Image (cartoon, rainbow, N blue to C red; front, side, top):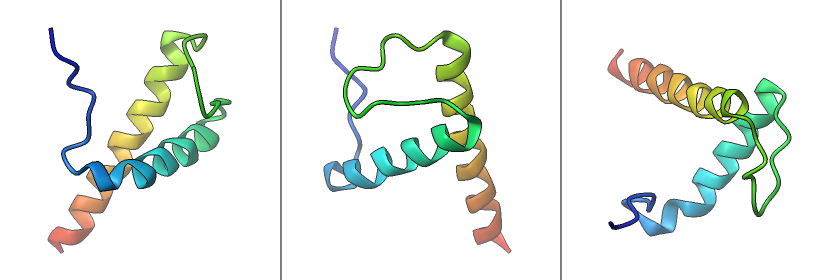
Length: 64
């Protein structure tokens, strides 16, 4: 099984990491720069959900 958790544009990794940290801060989840396996499913889901929400909002703004 291959790892599909790689960015399509490898140069975007730093920006994606910063976006993830900002989203975590907004929802009150304390992320570390390294291992975050101690997060609950709810915490991880809230970070990912917030990221998707913000990406959809940005896309909708670009449609206008």
